Image (cartoon, rainbow, N blue to C red; front, side, top):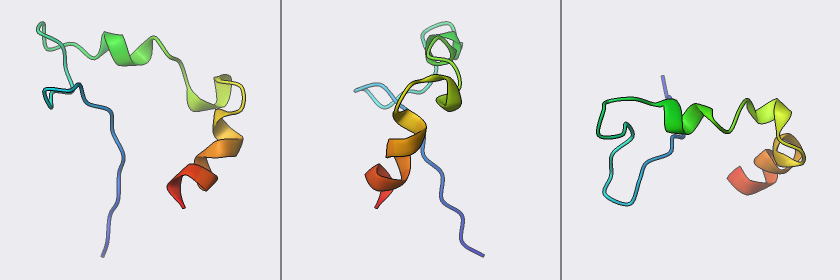
Length: 46
C-alpha cells in the first residue's frame, strides 16, 4: 500500500511553533474556503 501526504513546514524543518502549537497553520482555514486553491490543487500536484 502506498501513502502520500503533503504538509507545511518552516524553513528550519519544523511543523509546530516554539510552543508546540499548530495554530499558525490553522489561521489559513480550510482549503475549500480559499478562493481558487481547491481548483488549482490538482494542477499543482501534477
